[in-house]
Image (tube, rainbow, N blue to C red):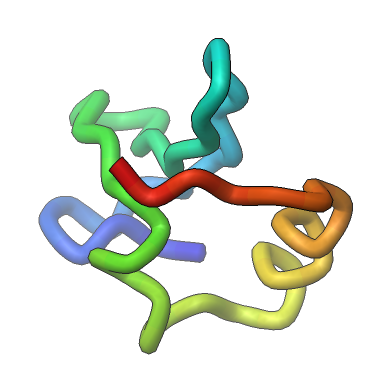
Length: 56
């Protein structure tokens, strides 16, 4: 998935008790709900591996 700001790649970032998407170029982190409408199939498959995603 591409970063909405800089078009870098977003990667799933697992942290203690939360999951975020982080850009490998600009370093910006996104909460899942911020980019939920733009998720691609590959990212959805990665997120589906987590039984619970906490929105904070």
